[in-house]
Image 1: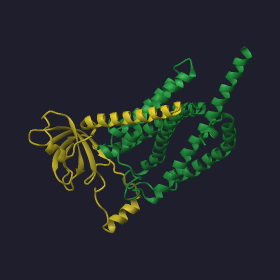
Image 2 (image 1 turned 135 degrees about the vertical axis):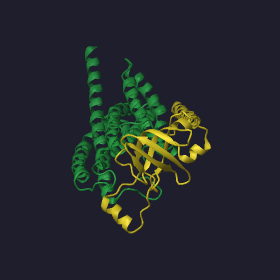
Image 3 (image 1 turned 90 degrees about the horizontal axis):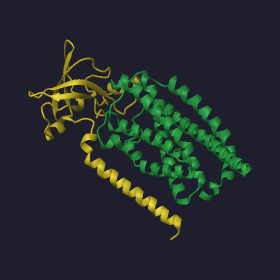
Image 4 (image 1 turned 60 degrees about the vertical axis):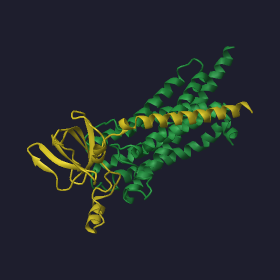
Length: 147
Length: 239
C-alpha cells in the first residue's frame, strides 16, 4: 500500500470516528439542545415547580385575554394545551394561531408564568395578496406550518 | 485530473483567464439581484419589509457553509496528496468564509429583533453557526501560528476536517431539535415554501454571492502564489 493510500484511509477513518463521536455526544445531551418543550413534552416529564424552561407551541385561537399589561393565553400543540400568563410587551408577530416560545416556570395551579415571549416565524414566505387569496379560497391552514 | 490543476503555473493562467468573467458576472448578478431584492419583490404577509434581510442572510449562509466544505475538501487533498495548491486554496478561503459568517450572524440578529422579539437566543441553529465562526477564526490563527508555514497548514487542515462535523449539524439542527429558527424553506420534501416572487431574488442573490466568493478566492490565491514566488526569489538572492 502506497503512503498516500495509507493517509487516505487514515483521514477517512478519523472522519468516521469524529462523526460517530459527535452523534454519541449529541444524542447524550439532546435534552439541553432542545430550545423549548411542547405541552405534550410537559406531560411526559417531571419538571420541578421553580424550574425555568421554555414552552413552545401555537397561541390557541380565541384564548387571548388582555387585562392591563398582563396577557393570558393558551399554548397548544394541537394535542394538549397550557395556560400562559405574561406581563410585558409582546412581539409584533404575536397573534392567535402564531407559533410562540415563552420562557418562565409552571405555577402549582398549572399556569405557566412567562418572563419573556418570543414569536416563532415559520418557513413560509409569501406576499400579502397571496395570503389573502389563500384565505379567501379557503385553502389557508392557520398555524399548520408554525411548528 | 487533480494533478493537472495542482500545477501552480497552470492554475495561475487558468485563474487569469477566468477572473474577468466571474468578476463581471458578480457585478451583473448583484445589480440585478439587489434590484429584485429591494424593489421588484413584494413585502411578506407577516414580516413586512424586513423579509428583504433574507436576500442577504440566506445566500451568505449558503456560501459560508459551502466555503467551509471547500476548505475541508482542500484540507483532505492537502493531507493525503500533499498538493501545496490545496493549502493555498484553504488559507485563501478561510477569511472569506469568516466574513460571510459574520454577515449571517449580523443580518440574522437584525431580522430576529423585529420578528422574534430578540437579537439572539442560544438555540441549536444560532449556536452552531457561532461555532462555525470560531472554527474559521481558529483556522486562520492556526495557519499563522507556526514559523514554518507547512506546519501551520497541516494543523489548520486537521482542524478543518474535525470541524467539518459541524456542517451537517448546522444544516439539520432545525430538523433534529426544536429551535427558534425556522426550518429550511427551500429544501423541503413538498417543494419550496417561498412564493416565486420572493424565490427569484433569493436565487439571483445566491448566484451573486457564489460568484463573488469565486472571484475573491481566485484573487486571493493568485496573490498568495505571487507572494510565495517573491519570497523564493528573495531567499535565492540572499544566498
